[in-house]
Length: 322
Image 1 (cartoon, one colour):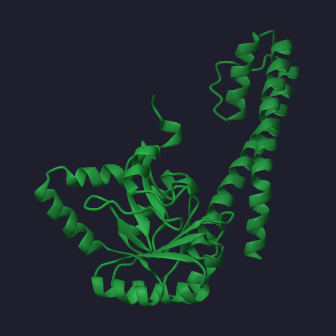
Image 2 (cartoon, one colour):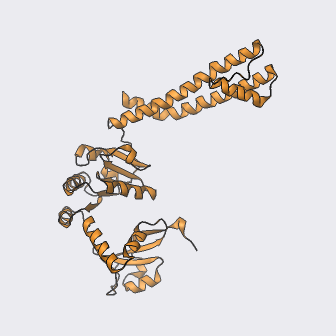
Image 3 (cartoon, one colour):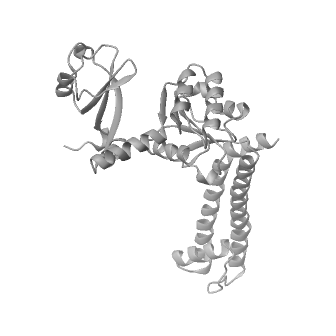
């Protein structure tokens, strides 16, 4: 019964609120016109009187001077006050029901597929959803967090992501990619196993805290793993060698002006050296991905294969500057 009522409110509340507000505003202006004609007041003054009457403020500085004016005042009160009351009741009711559905774990509306799926109750998961939402990517977050912590436009499936019933609500088979993280590696492994069972064909990446867990995830078929401890350690080590190495890395992955893309090798560049591809393609070719391994091409100049892909840093289209 509650779910049916919620759907009715979602479908009709907005239209009803607009209709009621439009009727109330029309009644105010019509009442102001009638008051202006019968009481010989200026129209703007009459509009002021109608608004104070409709909002029950009633300063008393402008009042009806005869019986016809009092009838106009009664008509304005009997139409506008109930209309505004109905608007407030509809909005308050819809807000209360929506909050109640979230408390009861009933609100699981998902965006149109495909979408990105982020699984994990951790600050890192929230930060990742913020970055994805900022790039206007449709995102579904599965986490046991409060609604007010979730970025706008991110769809939350609230609950423990290590439970199959919770993870199933996110419809992982409808996602195009998924990222698994968690407060600890045990939770991450449980979520990853469930996700692999629910959506065997889904491309899954994982953010772990240790190299051993990363190896275990690779045994599950999740090859796109990043160990956060190793990443931080290597970044800081490079920063000690070169003071701005960390700034360069952040600039590449966290800038609105540029985007890092992995693109297939164009057919006409297959069989050529990476250095030749770098000089001929637009953007900055950072490296070559061949057989799942990234080759930077700094120490050697590998030949680009037809099945390889390129890591390219290029200006974001709507931010390109000449």
